[in-house]
Amino acid sequence: MNLVAEAVRRFKSVDLIRSQILGLKGLLPRKDRAVEVSTGARLVEEAIEVRNAVRSGNREALIEELGDLLIEVEAFLTAHDIDLEEIVERQRTKQRELGQMEG
Image (cartoon, rainbow, N blue to C red; front, side, top):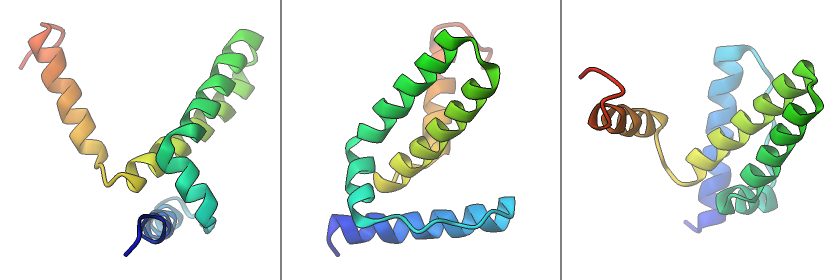
């Protein structure tokens, strides 16, 4: 299966799970968006929007943009077959090594 088709399949399953857990209607991603997400371009764009919201001092805009960033992080993880728990565990290990967390 090619990378784009696989990314689209995974996005659909994430949207289905999200809609079941959160009661939200899932949006089916377009193939071109799957490629864009897999490159990280959307992460950068959303991070810039978070920075702009911080600079504006508008808390509601910041909440909105952080939500958008979270969606893109989830999509990026899915596109690259990375489980969020892998990242959390890696960070915990790093914090223990740096003495920031008791282990």
